[in-house]
Length: 147
Image 1 (cartoon, rainbow, N blue to C red):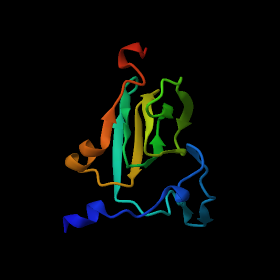
Image 2: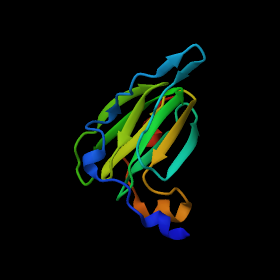
Image 3: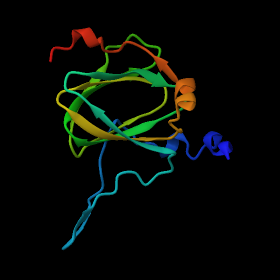
Image 4: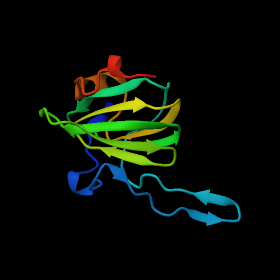
């Protein structure tokens, strides 16, 4: 049963071309709307809550990728190619927006307000699988953040 964790469901030609993901138009009728987020093979969806002023990530993944869809709140998303000393690029994201992180990209999130997001990942997110794929870096020093 554990073999599903090692099955690859995609390749890089299928990933978004840039970090900020343009969402398709929702299907809307009298009942409301359905917004498609990810029509793509994945192995995990996690709900993450973060407090204003906190820093998450500060790492990169060897093989994992993930989408982050913001349900509420906002954050600055910092990123650069792993293994470089390049100044990180930054994207400000708010509720209703989504960003994609490919493997081998240093990334960090600085939360501008209390935030809830969905992380949608290629790899399973049990602790053993996650820790074997993540490499920690200090892209953003948490002590440098002013709340």
